[in-house]
Amino acid sequence: MAADRPGLWQSLNPAIYLISILPGAGVWMVAGDIRLHSLVPATLAVVLLQHAINLLNDASDWKLGADTEKLQSWVRFHHQNTRTAELHGWISLVSGGMLGLTVLALTGKLWILMVATPVLVLGYLYNSGPRPLSYTYLGEWVTGICYGPGVFGCLWMLGGESFDVRAIMGCIAFAALAVCLLLSHQPPQIETDRLAGKQSFAVRYGAQRTRQAVYLLFIIFLASYGLALWSGTGNGHVILVYVGVSLLALLYHSRRQPKPISVLLPSTLLLLITLLVTIV
Picture 1 (spheres, rainbow, N blue to C red):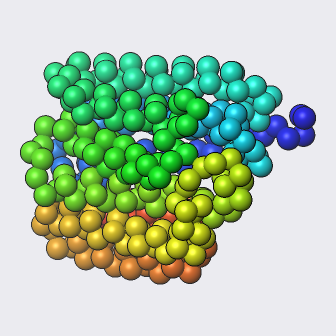
Picture 2: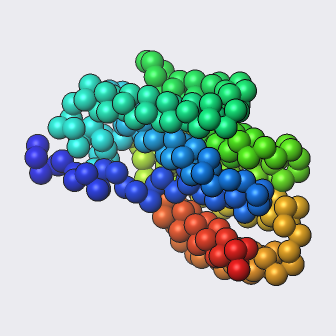
Picture 3: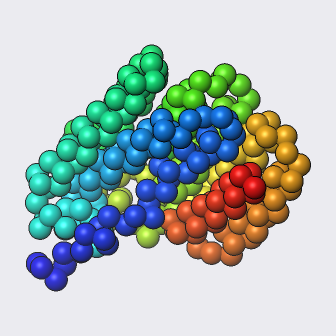
């Protein structure tokens, strides 16, 4: 029905793409001398790949009967036509892949494909087939791998930095943040996910355990990225600001029910304020 069709902006939900943008900002702050002319288009490629996964995931969920109550579904935007949503997703997937490949070729870093290709395959399997990985207990692990070693790790290697404690802590931080975001939207969908056979974290462990896991993962993100930043900058003023804003972010996060906005808002403000202090 036309009344059930969301608008483009509502379906796009731009804030959700912060999970692909924040690792790029995180790499820039910790690595320091990475060139923006390669980091920015590489981050855009990640955004396009996330967009593709969102579309393919919505189509897969619709076919399997999960998230049918979701108003912001891309399938609803495409007049409940899963084929059109999938075509949209494949166009975004190819565009993001070609842009990323171009960046790697121009920077002479095609060897990063040894890491990026398996991650891209995992992203595809997250939504494909009669039993996507997102419907199994592996869904959370795949999300963490894709955004930790996948996004942060590949952007880090693009900058030519050595894979040291900064990279390891950064990978852990953004893996934790991505899984935190994933779990934050699951509690309201427990019943429909269970009926569709989706073994999400919330279905397996319940709403209360999921909320506890979201809070713990947010702490892991704050602590891990703090260690990466401390190892990378050594600037006492930057670290002091980071710690102070982290405590405020944790306080904000702890006083709200888990949902994507309560994860993305404080984490984005934290990195933005820290970035401004780093530049100054």
